Image (tube, rainbow, N blue to C red):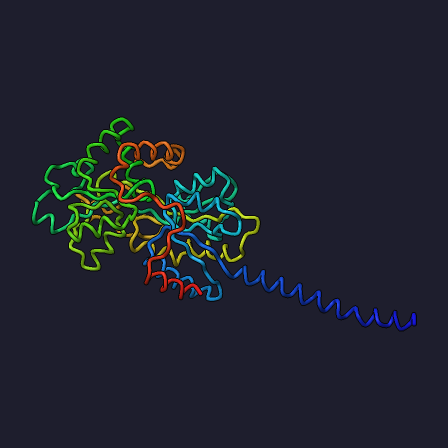
Length: 375
């Protein structure tokens, strides 16, 4: 009987071991599946995201992406979500917001493979490895609608002062700085260029001609083209895109133009998703830099020839860096909360709707298009 019992135990061992190995294999399989599913939050335009993810899937067809579109103003809320709800990556956000996130311990250091080829101006130098890495710089622009120009002629605005001309009778539409990076960079650069006292006086004068402030940074360009306003304040890449679609607008870039840098970051989590490294390397790769350079005036990769802006400026200046306004990212990140509180107190009555606090749903058709790509 003892021998039989011993024999039974020896025979049972392989079964126990096999069960353990099956459980282990299942766990590894789940971990492997998780490693190939990447959660990304972004404030980039849906059309651009689709085109860029087509490129990403060429190189990483097995990585499944969960993409959430959020306003710039909601980034910090997203990064403070519970661990299981946090994104793995913040993609294409203003460095002002990412710098705030860094200071709050919400980002994890990460250096892309080609860090030595990137301009040092395009990543933070707070430690041995950067907490955010920039992709490109984008500029404000003024989009003047041809309908308004023909009906109520006014001079094309090539400066901040030009926006105050009384001839602009059909109003101005501007992005809301509470929820959009485009709106905040305009306000921030105005305050830095004019000085705070004079800057607030200028914004007060501008507000008299503003119809409303919108949480859609692309909206003002489209509104100008539709005749809903005389001038829409937006960003140059969107203005160019609308012109290519045939929109009846004229785009100008002012002297001391407001600008910001779009960057990416690895979100602080207990475990780093291995696919995140691949995504972050890809986002600042030479291939992507060539794509950015077609529509943006400066990119992170040194030596890359970028789009010239001579046709949009009064003095036909080709290099955007020669007319970029003051924009101290450190100052802007330290003072953003105070600036927005003051802005809302002065101008909040003209907000079309308040900034959302939760993730924005993707817009119907574009949602289906992007979701099918990400699977």
